[in-house]
Length: 346
View 1 (cartoon, rainbow, N blue to C red):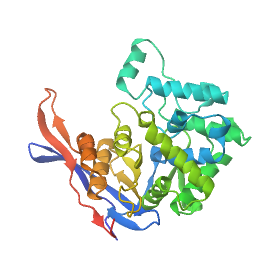
View 2 (view 1 turned 45 degrees about the vertical axis):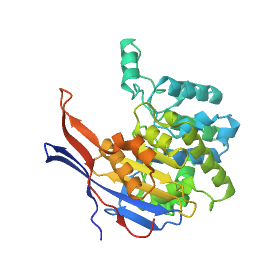
View 3 (view 1 turned 180 degrees about the vertical axis):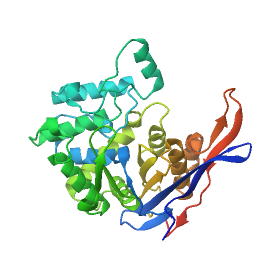
View 4 (view 1 turned 90 degrees about the horizontal axis):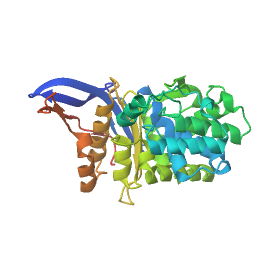
C-alpha cells in the first residue's frame, strides 16, 4: 500500500527547510492505465473547482449553450474560476441577459473580485460586493441555463436532488469509470454540490475530456466544445497573474487544466507525438496550499516529457519561486523536490 502523501514542494531560507508541502498525484491515459503516481493514486479528495470543465460538459449536453446562443467566450466562462475583472463581468452579464435571469438568480455569495486591483477599485468607489463577481458565477449561470433548457426549476438548480445536479454526478461517474453511488457529495464554497472521488479517476475523466474519441458522439462534441473554448479564451478561465491562464496559454490547445480550492489541480495533455496517448493528471496538496499545486503540476508535466523548451521558459516562474523578505531581497527559494514513480511507459 503506497504512502498516502509524499513530499512535493519545499521552501528553503538560507538552505534550511522552512516549509514542506506533502501531496499525492495520479497520471493515467484514456484507458485508465496508471502511468505514474506520487503517493496514493486512489486517495479520495473533493475535486472542488477542478470539476468545472466537466460540469460545463454536462451543461453543453442539455443543449443549453445552443438554446441560449452562448458564444465561445461564454462557454469558457462556464468552466472558469474567474478573477472578477471587467472582461469576466461583461461576459457574465451578457449571459444573464440571454437567460433572462437577474443576479439574484445566482445563489453564490456576494464577493469582491479575486484580482486585487479590481477589488481595490470597487472599494475605493464604494461599490459593495456582488454575486456577479463571485469566481463561480459563470458555472452557476450555466447550471441555470441547463435547467431552463430542460424545463426544470431553475431556482432550485443548486440542490443535490435537482435533475441537473444528478446529471453532473452521472457524467462524472461515466467519464471517470467510478460508480455514481460511490461519489461523495458535499457543499462547495459557492453553495452547489461538490464531488469527492479518487485522484486516479479524476485523471481519467480529464484524459477523456481532452481526447474524447472513444466517447458517444454527443459527449465527444460537448467535450470538444468546452476544451476549445478554454484554449481560445484562457484569460476568461482565470485571469491576470493566474496559473490556469498561464498553462492554458502555454499549451496552445494541447493542454486543458483547472485548479480547485485547497490545493487541488487537474489537467490533461495531448502529446505533440501522435503515437503517444493523451494523459490526465490529478493532484492534491495535503495542506491545501495553492502555489505548491501549481509548482507540482509544472514539474509533473516536465517529468512526463510533455513540455517543450518554450513552455518551460513560459512556466519557469510558476515552477520555482524566490522567497523574499519585506525589503524585496531574495532570501530563499520554493521548489519541487519529487521524482515521479512510473508504473508504465508514458
